[in-house]
Length: 290
Ligand SMILES: Cc1cc2nc3c(=O)[nH]c(=O)nc-3n(C[C@H](O)[C@H](O)[C@H](O)COP(=O)(O)OP(=O)(O)OC[C@H]3O[C@@H](n4cnc5c(N)ncnc54)[C@H](O)[C@@H]3O)c2cc1C
Image (cartoon, rainbow, N blue to C red; front, top):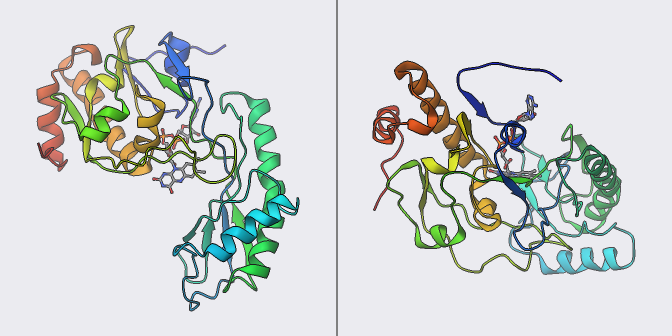
């Protein structure tokens, strides 16, 4: 057991470990059954012939998608891999694969993380063989590197003073105590039982929304802020606000809030949100359009 003392603490652990240990209530995953989004090991490929038309298969190359499903059915690619999800890498001739998948993983449990790590890494060679044989431009592709550890999309949802839901995203809600603005990433729920996107993912579009200060604090622990994918919000809303650019903006908001607390001898639960908003605007944060 270790003890750290600090005036103001920001929990940026992704899983909300500090807040959970400090007694902030939480639940994990989807409200009705606790299922969490699948875990993935990312792969960086080289040797891609990027002069090939539609080399990242974004036009929904149906032939490849159905072949991939067949290979999963034949047992040549381990389930629940089977989605074709490729992004360009930074260097020419490289591609990032978001194609391994492990379901029923609780990223706060080391035994689950280990199982997911093995499952995803075992999927990599068959996926590469499949791409070499079936995807134009991938004939000579090879693995440059993989992510160092399994990537966890979802674990705890902390219970804050406020709680953002999918309804707020669909309405494009401008909260009075906004501290993150201009969020418009769509709902993005990877299948929690099979291949590809989850059937529960809403078809409706997210309207540009804000995130209120109350999602970053709990009335139960007065000197704590939390930030990133564990903030107070529903499973569905999380599938949008978990994206990196939004998490960066959350970090800016909570870091600034903590600095103002120290400067003005305040606790996060007593923050003057108007003051915080003014400082964020001075830093260049966009005013919400409403
Ligand atoms: C496979 C995968 C693909 C994704 N693809 C995209 C994408 O294409 N675009 C996009 O925008 N987002 C994507 N995301 C989502 C995005 O990466 C995450 O939701 C986001 O990074 C979460 O940010 P965070 O700050 O909450 O947590 P993290 O980025 O996970 O940061 C938490 C940090 O805290 C550290 N930490 C944890 N516990 C402790 C501790 N006890 N002591 C010290 N340090 C600790 C961790 O090591 C980590 O560095 C993806 C996520 C995954 C898993």
